[in-house]
View 1 (cartoon, rainbow, N blue to C red):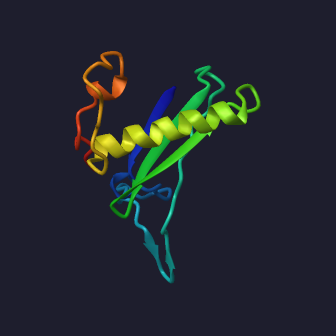
View 2: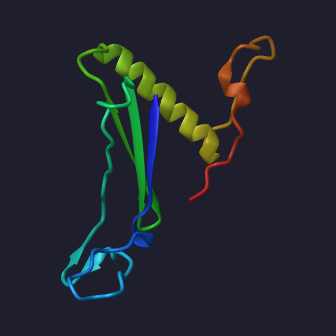
Length: 119
């Protein structure tokens, strides 16, 4: 899997017009328009990953984009990977408690730090 994080939208610098010296931070409000959702995707072409996972923070909310390499991987396998990814995010965000049988030493969820996702 490949992961790309564009960062916090409002902390990125906007373009500048010719002759201007400063670049101000991007804004989510432009006149009568508000940016409510923005999704970011990175290409699989150069990395060769089968599962690309990208995110950007807008208005204090983390926006995720999951874009697998289809049709190389079956829809069923893509769904299983996406479900596992959502479970991982729930654990690190603190919204799901890890319940692992102590005999399951090979379960990777045991290694996840609970409630460690920060914006």
